Image 1 (cartoon, rainbow, N blue to C red):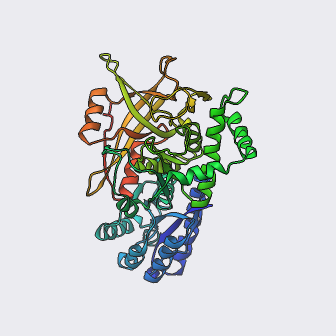
Image 2 (image 1 turned 180 degrees about the vertical axis):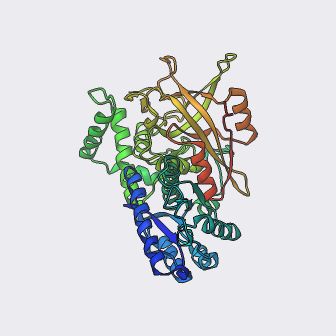
Image 3 (image 1 turned 90 degrees about the horizontal axis):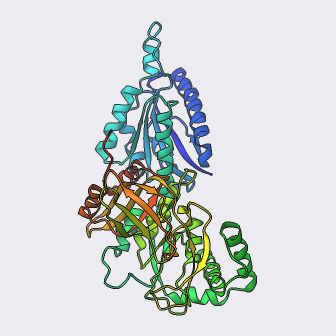
Length: 469
């Protein structure tokens, strides 16, 4: 199980009795937080109380080297001189949240004495610790308040979500089959710099690597894939040849994933030599399994898709790739229709998707099978990442997904949404900041989730927020 280290700061100055009480309080707090995160399949692991520089370095180095450690929660139970944290903090390579809390919710005014003050002086320790974090320039989250307060618990849960996404990001391997769509600018980017910043190991593979694996798929493997399709989607019998072809693509990609360890990929309709169809159903089902995807060589969106799906694990709502397509500019009722040629994630489906085969007027291939569905509804966010040459920019704005009218001549997956707080303000914001046409939409995440991700990865973040009512 993945876990967060719970690291408690103190020192030897106050004696063994104080340290014993620090340990007791730390156990209670760790047990409570562990219970609050149990539904996320993330544990809280209490570490030995930090009393000096050697202990700080030992624990924080261990956190950095533990593959199951997502991040570190640090709490100052007593005053803990910050110089003793320097070497440990310099070695820390995992996200951190500073929990500014106390073991006691209320002060016992009638009995309080200096022993109580020395034991419960988080207000003193917090300021010392925050200074050294700022002096060292270490990005971190902060949760403020009594640790049992629901708002504080949610801040810890948010940190856990984002730390899980950062862990996924740092280990993410991405394959680009073919290259960026010719002449398109916004989907391109510096793959080396994104690996340095986010950990994305993005490498080129020839489409022939996929095609060779497709040729090795057996009838038994195809039938096993049909069982999955029948369970998840509405699939007409007998099975059309186009669906058989898509099943082969997906089985082959599963084998490629196993061999390479990738968690995201791109393809390009301009470079599909050896494939009879543009991958549609196959890609959609892979996204439903948590594999990130970006079309036309858009590796940034593929990676962002995978990372945000990891961030939204165990949260209600859907998260997936979408493309801005066309507007309805009816005055006062402006909305946007998002879709793609084929590859919209079924995680965004309102109802059980239907497998259908239709002509596709691009790519010069056979009619491909795809999932057709209308999108989920509810308030959410739209986000994209662009490469501005000397840095990456993460852009986000609020949207509201709404029910769409019937579109009988548009046999693809599609979503309809309002831009909040208004169409004109939101669209202007997106365009002023260079937002791309490939993005990720989520009703499971918030702008604050993305802001924390940007803070902890030192990314530029621009967001449009709704005005307080």
